[in-house]
Amino acid sequence: MPRPAGVGREILRLAVPAFGALIAEPLFLLADSAIIGHLGVAELAGAGLATTVLHAAVGLMVFLAYSTTPAVARLVGAGQPAKALAAGRDGLWLAGALGIVLALLGFWTARPLLALMGADDGAVLGFAVEYLLWSLPGLVAMLLVYAGTGVLRGFQDTRTPLLVAGAGFGINIVLNWILVYGAGMSVAGSALGTSIAQWLMALVYIVMVARRASGLGVSMLPHVPGVMALAQVGSWLMLRTASMRLAILATVFIASSQGSVNLAAHQLAMTLFSFLAFALDALAIAAQALIGKELGAHALETVRELTRTMMRWGLGFGVVTGVLLAIAAPWIGWLFTTDEQVHHSLIAALWVLAVSQPIAGFVFVLDGVLIGAGDARYLALAGVVNVLIYAPMLLAVHLLAPHEGPWGLFWLWAAFGLGYMSARALTLGVRARGDRWMVVGVPA
Image (cartoon, rainbow, N blue to C red; front, side, top):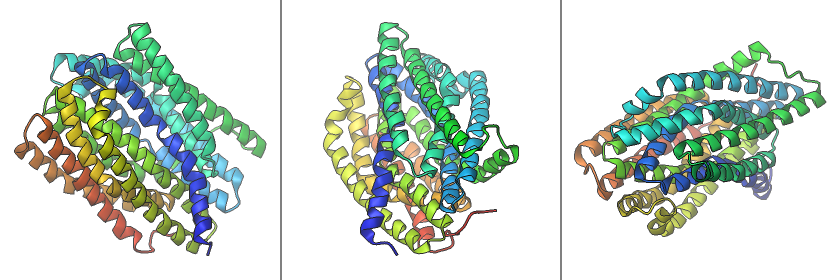
């Protein structure tokens, strides 16, 4: 069994650069929120609602990274790099096809879908539709970035995604500022700038995978059975992600019923939650890559030591991020809006979010461990159970909590940050205590 210090170095080697790459997406959202927030409350609320719908759809496709990473990593651990790259190539083709389908559906259903989400204010709905439609051209690229990132992570490379994400973030800020204020495109400019940045990132991944494929003698043409097999494996992960997105969408629906001020504050709080989630998820990415590789190499003792170490680290990182968020809560809202009502509601939500961070750190790490092990079926079924536990909490908030002001948002975030995340922690913790999820070798 490797020494704990050696295990820690391996985790850090992957987790530290993964941290930078993972926060690129929430940084995109933070930049959008900061730029749009100074346009007005209606613009911020509309863009937040559209972003929730867009990322709910894209989030269902996160299996493109989360199934590709362990699949590639197992083959790498088993000493089969050509087959590993072929699996990643098929993931890119699947990402492109799914992206086109989702973009077309989005163009046809944007307005009724956003209205269904609770945008009954005419101005908010108008800005939401505008933001979503201008975001759709970049949706295909977002999925290609997922798949390309998964390929490199499977090859134990998290540094390259960091460089790509950093460049994309810088380009995104410049483009958004120019298009929103320079070109006067309002929320449409922010969405278009992000779409362009996503496409530039996607093209970089395609070129890198193609070059590596050429070096290994692997064709870039799709292998249809491989594409279909990847889609089938990802179906359980899609259900797992769907349950999580359903919980987030239901939370947004309750926030919408509390008025535009609380909806705007909730959008900011959820953006910060995503930022911290991706930061903590750096450990989960390390878990996916390392657990997959070590199971492919039949190294069960290393898998156990990795799991124990990452659980401790997840809790510790959650404590640190929670303390920092609690300290920053009274002032962080000024980065996004000057509206004092939004500030008051946001502070209430952020204090609850700060308390829930250790739970989140534990959840994200174990989620990564089980994804890396390919335990997708359990994760999917547990996700359904978690939503069923969360639903009565949301109903209680809607019926009993104030329908406006800071206390309404406080109780909503108590239900989400403490109630829902604790349910996830329980179902994941129970599974991790046993050994049934540790299946060694390369699946047939």
